[in-house]
Length: 609
Ligand SMILES: Cc1cc2nc3c(=O)[nH]c(=O)nc-3n(C[C@H](O)[C@H](O)[C@H](O)COP(=O)(O)OP(=O)(O)OC[C@H]3O[C@@H](n4cnc5c(N)ncnc54)[C@H](O)[C@@H]3O)c2cc1C
Image (cartoon, rainbow, N blue to C red; front, side, top):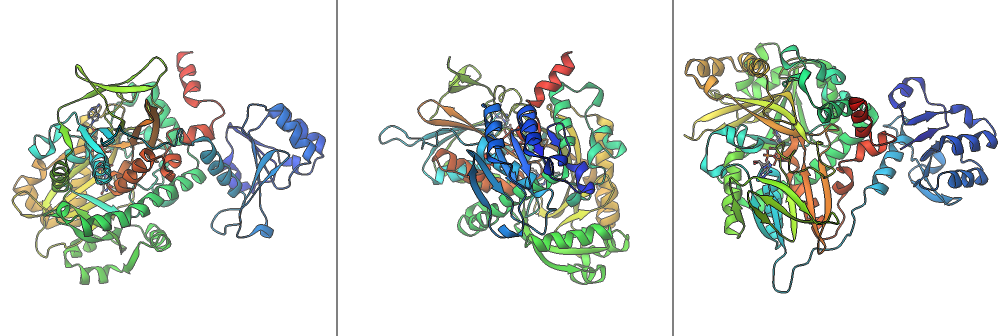
């Protein structure tokens, strides 16, 4: 969309908001109506952001000049409106007024409001009808993908009375075939963590302490970048994804971050409810309550304390001395000089493989049907483009509704949807060491600044023989659309990075694992589904007879954490109800706001030209 700003913006903020679709004309604030009319009718913005409303006649001229635009005005508020957002119509154009907020620079607030208004107005779920089945029959839903996201969705839908059939290209996770045959959840290490900051927006340099956030894709993993695929051989959709990732400005990254957090917050009581009321799912999963976060950098530590306090995640702060007293297992980590401080935060960890086994057993008892080794190739549509089924092998799958959550393996299947090419891969690695005495009792998150494994999870768990182990998961390697597009040297660099961290934080366990071969034998990786904005994807496509096809995915480092909120959003969509994820995770949220014309089209034109 095209945005015209007519108030003077502070110099330190200006660089962060200027873009191809932003026209900055502070001179118009003091010029007469004739000039404003000329700008509105010739530049034809979709949004006017102004401090003062123009004359009514000026706005009417703008309306006449932009007959196809869903134009609106954002008025930069003043203290007169403190505490209450104003929304009214002026010369037939909706006007939204910002509410002063001490936490956000007043010159950025109007843009944030414009983005929110645009997102709410342009991504409204069509239909809004409840999916109904014929008399005496349950409404059927075919789910494609049996990773953590769709498994939790299946659980919620089954409990809500839907009849579920589930298809996955991988073998049954309970059969424990080689890890490389599975998706991210089952293929990765046997550990996942819930924290309120999981899936932090990685475009947002303020919060992640990744100082080189805007050129991560210029360098290989072995050179401290994120490229694990061959950067000289990437496709146009991959270049587009990287371009969008780098284009997200800090103010939008901040907004997106808060939206991701809202779904983590929504998921928290839902997880607590499952733990309390669905105890069969948590049998033998080594559920550990509470997370300890360690920091190697003083300023990152201080920022993190504030942030966790603000989002109500902070339980206590610990100096290295207090840490050693409370957690003797961390004495070596502190001695290495890599811990300037620690915090205890809200969260839990579990053995995710056992958890999904329990979940599948429970789902089958509730009557769902699972079809393993069934790759679904295509969405079939009728001549009017309405979805009528899915193709798997040589047969057609039909149901009242469909939910596709393919992780990073959906490029072919999602063709023709708005989610096409939006979900790409970012690889992470896993290794295991024994949990030696004095044993670690709480799982950790380690922030090791400027290291190849700068964010790492260490989960306290047990292996299949019941031995106490620590599972270390970390690293970011962009694979693009093909999760197998991995350069061996860069993968090796990531494993070596993990070994280096293990050596510093748990030297005795590292030596033991090196000696008995566990270190090498436990190496594995999995590829996280990731979007260029770090927001997840939620797309709804109308299906014949008021049914829906829903695409979910792309939750980067938080697929496990957010899965109950995603399930809620799917359930709401099927029941014709609103859930904020329908808009906030819309696959075109960023591009429709930040570019004047579909951005992919521009890049593809340049490439062809
Ligand atoms: C090192 C590391 C640590 C992590 N730690 C955490 C954590 O602590 N907390 C957290 O919340 N998240 C964490 N994550 C992220 C989390 O693991 C992922 O977000 C999550 O597993 C993704 O689940 P999914 O269901 O979206 O995808 P997947 O688990 O990949 O499942 C998708 C499934 O769809 C199937 N599929 C795909 N296409 C088709 C098709 N066409 N036909 C049939 N089947 C198909 C695949 O076979 C696969 O089984 C971590 C990731 C990594 C790499």
